[in-house]
Length: 188
Image (cartoon, rainbow, N blue to C red; front, side, top):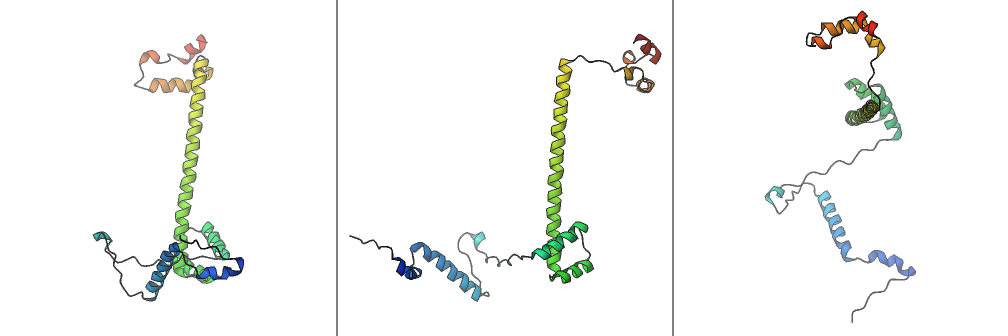
């Protein structure tokens, strides 16, 4: 009958660090492989499998640069005033913030991309709001037209400019034209 190991007492907790479980082996092996690869960067390892996978593995990425709050604050302040920097301005700012020229350049490129995305999202939200408002107004006008008969506006009937414009339109048929402003006014 197999025995089940019992858990160590609290006094023996220090011995737990020496215990290894099967699922820990793969992560330890992986860590060892990473350490070996880091110590010997000039060795080329080849992948085995599909022919397209039989390439050299990609180089390790440079870790993400983290900036201090002061640096970000100054970069944001400058970006708010000026979206693009000349090379001399960029070099001056980089020196003042103790950053490299490339870091400032990359930060501004990334910030402009974020700014364009944000403004595009804002414009899209405004456009959708305007569309919703237009649809609502159209629905209200349609409902109003169903419940109320169409009445002619007396201002349009007495407006000589509208009369003149109507008579200048060559495509309008003669039956729909107003004959004269005075004759229409006398009818009302």
